[in-house]
Image 1 (cartoon, rainbow, N blue to C red):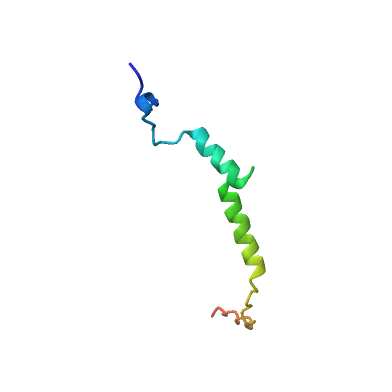
Image 2: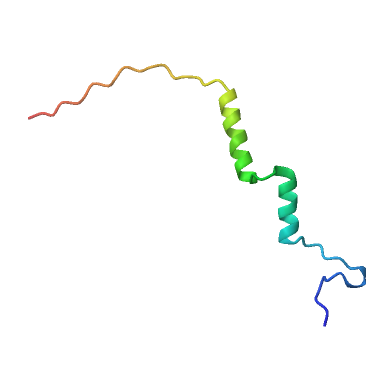
Length: 67
């Protein structure tokens, strides 16, 4: 008995196999994962954006215990 979606009679399965997905991601990203590329892009964006520093606040006085 033939398997479902085996390509018999010109009917092609719509699901992609794991190797198809791996091949596509390698073509898009090279040896890096998508997650790695997103993290690198976020780091680059954070470096490019100037940081606004908060004004320095004087240290708070320590509370004294009553004896």
